[in-house]
Length: 366
Image 1: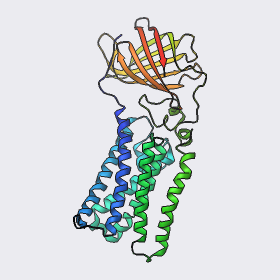
Image 2: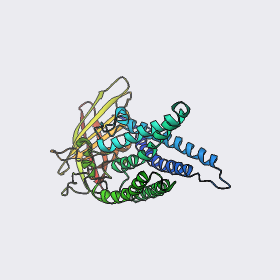
Image 3: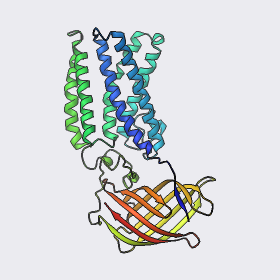
Image 4: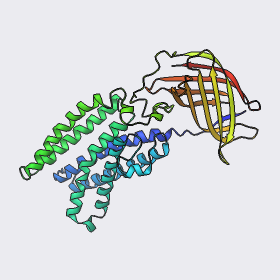
């Protein structure tokens, strides 16, 4: 049986989702700050107000463009069960409903701001101004969405970036609240109170929330996703989960394996190859390699996607991941447990489709 690797990898969607989400938060922060500068009529000799106006508008449109890419790649990635409906209707997602719901609220508010801005003459100034206040409201929802669902929340650079965005927003909020003081004193005092309570709330919430062990499970990640993570990483592993790694499992081993191999058609253009193996004398004895791809003449496939699991007989999905290298029947994979701990697997296999048998060796290491 011949198995060939495809040239492309679907994990690019995951990287795009992470990158565009982070950039969207930065652009949204800049957009709100520039909007405040515009309200305060800030200008210099070298930068007239109409230039500031144009920059504010273009940054806002760029934020919306990156947000659309963020949404599309999240839907195409397929790791988390997020539907198009979940993007529009808040708190309806099966995956982290509260935190994905915050993202949906931010998206709906941004769409309302964009539409009323583009059709400002039709809606009138008062309606446009009332809706435009949504730009202030959507920012905290976007921040909570990113911290609650993001796979980089524990990374130092992400915490510094989020802290920088918070500082910019506090400065913008204070500047907006003090413009025209003391008119409308009630709303202005409320805004100043919010500028103090938001960072305090984040400092209290983060250590017991996204930065704490078990956040993935507590945030509402389906249990099926807690058992397997993508080989390149995922939102489950870096954020932790409620399931601790198997302490008695060896960190490395070499073993003989034997089992079965089966190839079957999924459609006219795709086949699936299932390789089920048992590692002799190992606690983590249950192994499965599942490959999908285009069928080749003479048997075998050209791989387009994969799934690899490793575990005990009672819990065969203790580790989950993907194939990272494929040369004939020499297969390399990276798998993670629910806590993000990784193992690298290297298989040397002999596959006999006629007898549906699979034999060979496997080595595992951190």
